[in-house]
Amino acid sequence: MSIYKRVMGKDFYQLHPMLQKRYEIQRGISFKGTGMMESITGGPKWLYPLFWIGVKFRLLFPEHGENIPFKIVNTSETGRNGEEQIRWERTFYFGSKKRYFNALMSLDSERKIIKDYLGEPHLFYSDLSLHVTTEGALKISSNRQRLVLGRLEIPLPTLFQGLATVTEKYLEEKDVYLIHVKVRNPLIGTLFSYEGEFTADDIS
Image 1 (cartoon, helix red, strand yellow):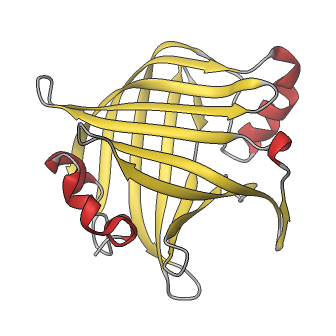
Image 2 (image 1 turned 60 degrees about the vertical axis):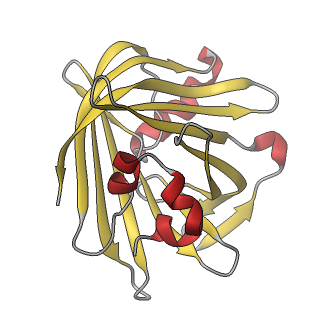
């Protein structure tokens, strides 16, 4: 049983069937998809030094634009302590440049949340909560966050957090997954966002 199915319980079955299939990622199963991001936006230019640090950690990037080719790969792995982990590799193609927004997720069964370590190597940590909308879409929200410095994890005050909201749905008319991701800071506003569509190349 996937970590997403375990954390959502019976609500998992309220998702659109194609979203259930997509998030039934467990040992021996992976998901690969390609598509196009209709729009990618970023924060103010004075934050570009932060975005360039993000490039090194495969997390954030300064580029933005429209109609950007996109690839996503979700792979199940086993962590050092034996726990199941899902690696998220999201690649954006700006001409000859590749930019990434990668993460490693696992389950905290006691608190009933998904643990999300962002970047490679990890730079930030977020608690994730998952909910189903009335139309069968999946909404993911980040909550408590920490800065990760090697083995040291420092809790971040709310004013320094980049809180993410992800909405993913399935559009039957086009046979595509629709994705909208927005990362916001309480003071600055939107730090990073993208939205578009992708199709499943492989679920195996």
